[in-house]
Length: 212
Image (cartoon, rainbow, N blue to C red; front, top):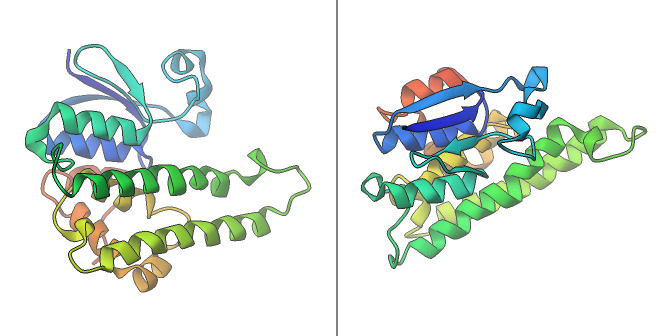
């Protein structure tokens, strides 16, 4: 049956598509056009009632959503890809901590930044709200940068699925110039991801060419 991935370019589905490429797995891609609100069509809501992407159907027919959960499931299904440290490995706890930090503390704020009036009354000043949300997102990225900068950090010890999440999600809301100046370690992780042989063509399709 193979894998089926619902997503869209320049979205969180990049992480899943890239992880599958690293694992040597083929995937059937189904684009959900967010500009046409296709994520709220009945056909897709039957797959994910939250109306969000990505969603992944596994080879056994099981479909799951939530990017962190999908990445963890793929790491279990394809241990040879080393998407996460193995069970019992000392770094696994750190890996799970930072994967969930990025997925739960930062990723949801992107929706608030992009669509502030989904979360505030119509009289809210969108510009002011975006400014405050961006500040909060940057604060949370700085925690990741600080961890990546510490001696012996797991985050720069080798490739993992967390790199995919960092590379994709740090592309949004905070500004490339700010990231380059304030988060050089995260910028390095992003550049490494964009240039990985199996990931590079997927990166270009989602985000364009990586500027060096």
